[in-house]
Image 1 (cartoon, rainbow, N blue to C red):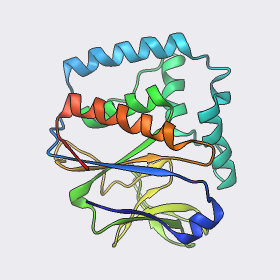
Image 2 (image 1 turned 135 degrees about the horizontal axis):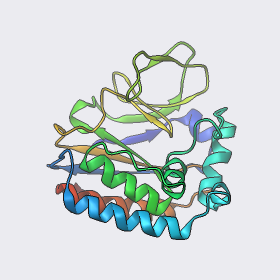
Image 3 (image 1 turned 180 degrees about the vertical axis):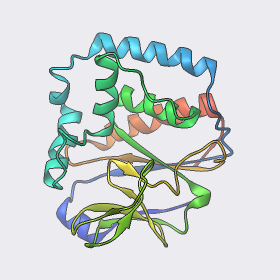
Image 4 (image 1 turned 90 degrees about the vertical axis):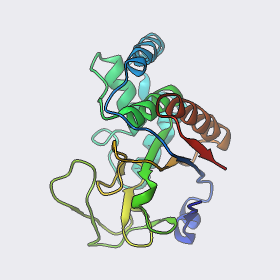
Length: 221
């Protein structure tokens, strides 16, 4: 089991920060799945009926992410929290991104619960994961980027024993992303101050249910 450690510097700055972890082995990730596409339609319909674009940002969970982004000097009007961005796409009638069955399934769970979820190919990680503040000049290549970002002091990052794997809680690394070749996955349920452990447990349960339904796998406990 890969451990996830919150660094003492982060604990001091955000003492009520909670992050949950799940590991799933032997998944079968495919480019698409007809049953998943039908399930997407159901989630999209429910989301369009429930949410309003004008009031979306004021939902308590989504507001907690926005407030956290401001605290870490990320403008949430330019870089939207993950769940809010997905929900907003649905509400205004834009299609959800289609990546692969695993990513698409956990994106639906994020829509359903409003909680940001990160996923890493466990076989591309080295050692345990740790949350800490960045140092100026560290480089990070996010998914889809053509060249690395040069980070500033005080950004929040996730690292394994060798490299950065995420800028928390909104951008994962290209090197450890989940692809059709992935067999083993580590999931993070990205809490921020103001989001309860109960809410994160809900997100964990929904996500595990969705990804195992469409990708199989065995949950490690």
